[in-house]
Length: 113
Image 1: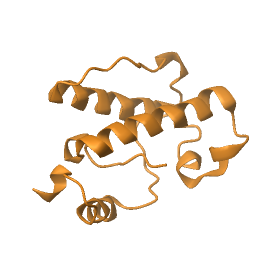
Image 2 (image 1 turned 120 degrees about the vertical axis):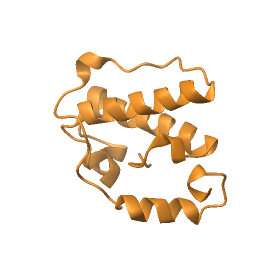
Image 3 (image 1 turned 135 degrees about the vertical axis):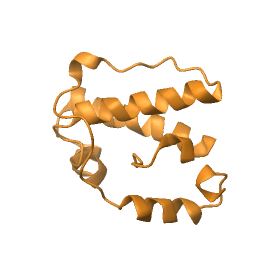
Image 4 (image 1 turned 45 degrees about the vertical axis):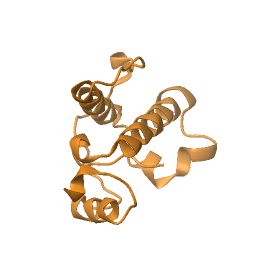
């Protein structure tokens, strides 16, 4: 499970779509299932606890990138469930580390160009 913190324009199609899918799963854990079971103790989940506003904002950035690339988006989040402050200040990997991770992946992430 990973929600990147770099700008979505740097993600290849594979990583952009995967993050969107993971973000929806994380959103459901945080807004519907509470802190119990499965991924509720995963470090990626824990960094978003109490920050559904920041997660909502990340989703909107992904949706904007979808639109820029001509992709359809049919799974909006309920903005009423977006609580806390916008912006994520807690990182599992720094932005620089995330860029290095992507550079080392066998994909077409735009970060390489």
